[in-house]
Image 1 (cartoon, rainbow, N blue to C red):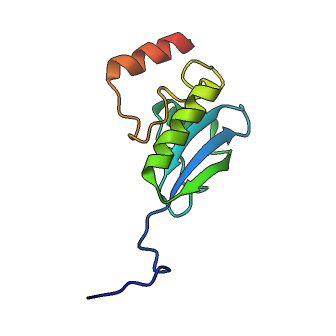
Image 2 (tube, one colour):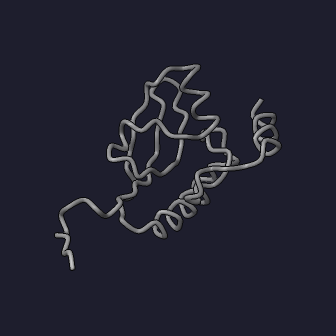
Length: 117
């Protein structure tokens, strides 16, 4: 039997974060298991497009850190609803943060972009 000490970093840590663009104020709610969530840019379609257009000038606020993916899902949905991130023009999110990587159909992306213009 192999015993692994608890401090060997075998446990995955998840971060729920808000990215805020410094020039435009646009926000993005997301999660990552990246070891440095401040360097991780985020994966949202609208957010990445915004960064390409306005530059990578953003700050990251860590809302929650956990080793439980279920907690990421819970708190991601909680903050998504609290801040209405999908319907608000203040947010780049095209869907609620539910820990599923943001996969959605091209039709829903087009619909959301049209509503923003």
